[in-house]
Amino acid sequence: MATTIEQARAKAARVRLMIFDVDGILTDGSLHFNADGEVMKTFNVLDGQGIKLLQNAGIATAIISARKSAIVSKRGSDLGIPHILQGIHDKKSAFIQLSKDLHIAHEECGFIGDDVIDLPILLRAGFSASVPNGHIEVRSRVDYVTQASGGRGAAREVCDFILHAQNKYALALAPFLEVSNDDR
Picture 1: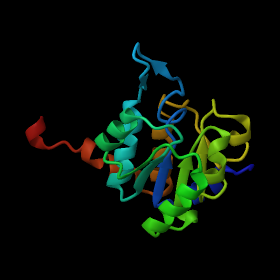
Picture 2: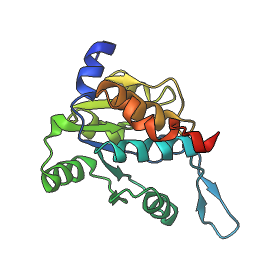
Picture 3: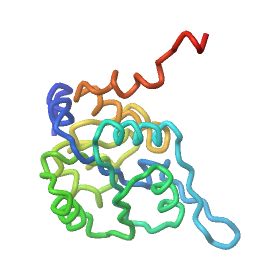
Picture 4: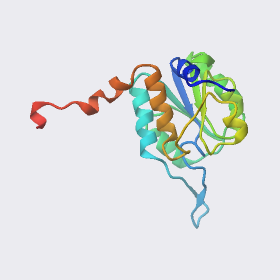
């Protein structure tokens, strides 16, 4: 897309709903199976905190994933993500319905994904992002490519980028920086 960083910031400044893919974004994309054939996933705590910061700043959050996993439901629930759509192979329709249900225009939605199945959303969302280990066809079409890899802080980087673009970053960090005389 050849979006400049200034154009990406302007798009991120409009985000009212940020949607996350899971495998390759909230995880590193690896699938680990235990002896019973259950899939295990590893999530990054920085990403989780970034999602909470977005929510605290008034930005809605959601997950749209092609795979279905109980651990994703658990992680999403732990983070207070109200919209966890799994087993979704037609991501475009899910995106359109979610934005309609929440009364949020596509231009006010952000999405981060890493593979071609994510393109139908990435090409419609007002702000799109991917990871450096994402597929070339995805990276070449998004507004922003993170420095961090999927499952290694990429989601947090996007959350911080949005908060900075909306001039909400300092306010989001303020509760963690407060020191009173009683604390000394």
